[in-house]
Length: 61
Image (cartoon, rainbow, N blue to C red; front, side):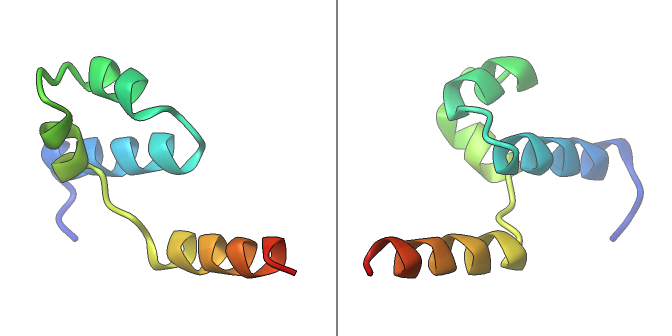
C-alpha cells in the first residue's frame, strides 16, 4: 500500500470505525457531506469480518 496522505486517511477512517466510532460521527470527523463518502473511505479488515462472524456464532448458542 502506498504511504500517501490519502492512504493514511483511509487507515484512520478504518481504525476509528473498527474501534466503534459511529458512522455519523466518523462522517463529521472526516468532513463528508454524504454517508456514502464515509463508506468509500472506510475499509473492513479481514480480521474484523472474522471477529464479527465469531461473535454472531457465539451469540446464537
